[in-house]
Image 1 (cartoon, rainbow, N blue to C red):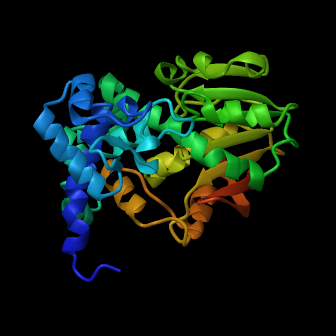
Image 2 (cartoon, rainbow, N blue to C red):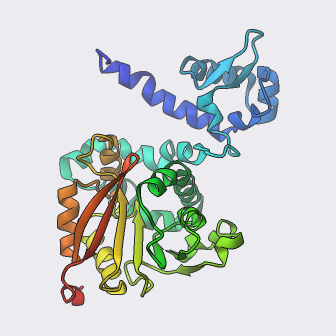
Amino acid sequence: MPTNPMEYLFPGVIAAQAIYAAVKLRVPDALASGPRTIAELAAETGAHVRSLECLMRALCALAIFEQTPDGRWGNSPLSDVLRQDHPQSQRAGAMLLTSAFLWRPLGELAESVRTGKPAFDRVFGERFFAYLASHRDDAAIFNAAMTEGIAWTTSALLAAYDFSRFEELIDVGGGEGALLRDLLSATPGLRGVLFDLPEVVCRAPAILTGVVAARCRIVGGDFFQAVPEGADAYLLKGVIHDWPDEDAVQILRNVHRAMRPEGTLLLVEGLADSASHAGMSELLMLIVGGRERTEAEFRALLSAAGFALKRVVPAGGQALLECGWTRPGVLERS
């Protein structure tokens, strides 16, 4: 354990931006075929030789890259997953977490802690998802990171829960369709619907291909207005934590209106009171306007929307919350 807070601060704040610089310059991709001299690496990435060497030395000290005995530079296991073509790439995630539209509001974290209000709104003058709607490049980073993260979580989800008992599953807020693709591939009898904003699902046909495409529909819409009706299962993975309570209840109420009385609601979220869910994500959600919740807080949220939490299924570092209807008439109001 560190004995001085500076052990967190240095090199942490610098290391994050150093990793961002390496990823933005595509250094891990340039080293995919093997170690390079600094001159070769600079020529391929378009970087200044001396400055790139400083960057590589700094990141080598953190085991992000490796230096060979003859002085060339190569990928380590840590930088290898930052390649764009790695099967479990974390490139987009690294770009997201070190992007200006996150580190700028993180610089106002103290104000969020003082007021309880998201720093993002204060810095950018609008809410997080409204900002993404008008900033395509940043939205592309966010959506790519969400798609990329599926590769790290789906296997645990499939091992923890049997989706074969459902006929049709609607993935609400399902992004570009990577999770639905994996669920349908692993569950041959299941049909699926991908539902998200039109500007998000427009990229789904490139992911929902082959035999999976024949068993799914892609629907664009806004879950604050309505969601597709009639399925026996509705899945929301990492959706509810993006929103404060009032908005989260509205989303859940719209799902309740659309779902059959005997249907099943599945939420995949981290639980704030779980030992596997680190508190740092709570601070990130605080500054962007979302909220990580405890199991008790989820129970209260679900109850307000007409659902009851039936059971909690551990799924790797996350939890699957299986829910059903409680009060059919409660949702006639907005």
